[in-house]
Length: 205
Image (cartoon, rainbow, N blue to C red; front, top):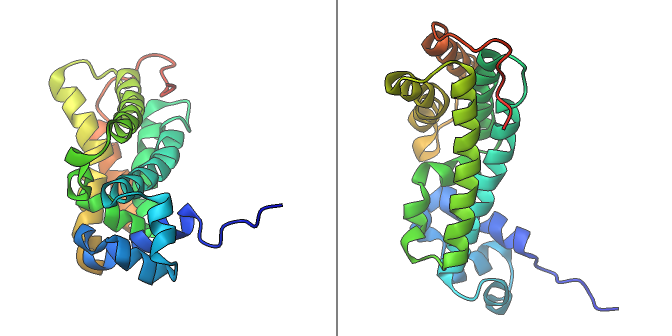
């Protein structure tokens, strides 16, 4: 029976997260990941044949982990305003629980070389974004947001505002205050409270 690999992809990506959180995307090199993880250079190249693939996998694993909880929050309540509040809280809470990965998200995909990713990784990123944005759109519809200004308000409440709150406190290694989740939830609620939800509308996708 073959012996399992000593250094698996998850361990190497965990090391890449630590490097990115401490020094930004430029710090994530093949040699640095090998040193941080304690793996031989060959183990890194065996799993990631080039740095572009390493950076793509790092970004995609991070954003996909975030999207799992975020989409679940969008689907978590039968009433769309309650689901919106849960999603805003989840976005901030996930970043608190995963500060290294939150630092990766704050850089954005372009900083991790998206322009040079192989096509399969671009498709994977686009597919995940479509699903997440589709969930936001479904919730917006449930809230009765049909005018462009109302749709913009939903986007601000569910995406821009939580990101801005996290960015202000966590950029450059800072931490979120204890009230951050509640503040995000309250602001989202205030922004969306005067929309007119459809009767029985939810946020199912």
